[in-house]
Structures are given as C-alpha cells and as structure tokens.
Image (cartoon, rainbow, N blue to C red; front, side, top):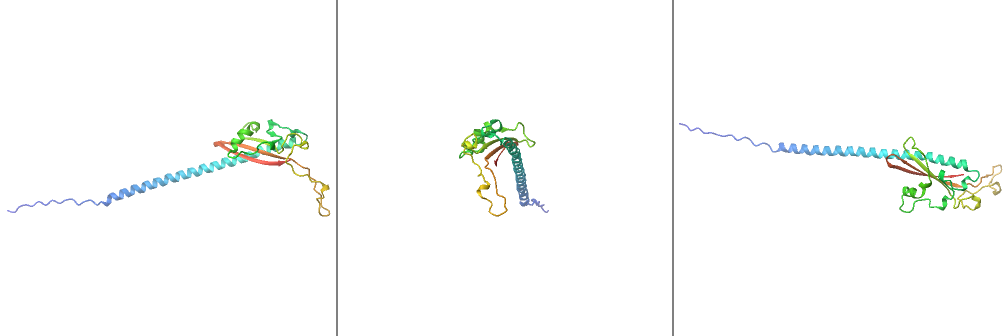
Length: 205
C-alpha cells in the first residue's frame, strides 16, 4: 500500500514595494498641500500690500484739499495786516519759524504733530469720500509776529525793481517783482486701516 504524502503549498510573500508607493503618495500629497498653503498666503499678502498702497495714495490725494484750503485762506488775507498775528481758528502761526518745525532726532512725525501742532491745527469737520480726515497748519516763515517791516525776520524772496538794471538787452522789459514772504503748509491725513500721511508745501505770497 502506498503512503499518501501531503504537500502544503505556502503562499508566496507579498512584494514589499507595494507599501512604498503609499508612502510616496502621502509625501507628495503633503508637499502639494504645503505648496497650496504657501500660494494662498502669498496671494493674501500681495492683496494686503496693494490695498495699503491704495489707501496711502488716497490719503496723499486728500491732502490736496488741505493745501488748497490753506492757500485760499492766505490769498483772502494777504492784504492788510491779517497775517501779522496768529489765527488759531485757521491753524495759522505768524511766527512759525521761531518754533521747532520738524521732529526731533528719533521722534516720529505723528508724535511731533500730536505734541506741537495738533492743538492749533485747522481740522475738517467730516471725512471726505475716501474716508480720510484732513487737518493742516500754516506757518509764516518769520521769527516774530507782527508786520514784516517791523523786524519780523521773515524768510522772503528778494525784491527786483527797474532801478537794479536787470534788462541787459535793448528793447527787453525790465523785471519788477516785490519781495514776498514764504509760508509752510503742513497737512495731516488720517484714514481707514490706520493710514496716516503727511504732506508739506511751501508757497510765496
């Protein structure tokens, strides 16, 4: 009688490479996720920067309103002696050159404004269409108040008259220009997102 022999067939071992594919896929997925997050943050940052620049430009444009209002005040009061004394209602100082006109070393313009200029600034009662609030001060570039002829020590342009002989060629019209005083206008604009802008202009009248 022949003996029966049982032969057991063991299953073939699974390939180890199939698990590596899953790990690689997970790593690629994580890398793509991080790249997407970085892209979103970059777009958000660029949008914020562009928005801040737009607010800053709008504040600078709003400063033109302050300069025009200040110049209109000077034009309306340049005759007579209205500009010989301070006018705090309109932000005007007749002896602006006698005080500190710029921030000290290490002091910001905003701190200088709050400390030295805000208490006499002319402030618009309501924001403009861009949401900006405008305020300005006018400084006559003189050491002292009073009429310029009374020793106010003003910064002024030299006068030019026909007697100075400024026409060098025959037939040319001689220059004749009176001396005028310089005024410095400082405008502060505050707007949305804590936007603050300062603009200065010097005019001669």
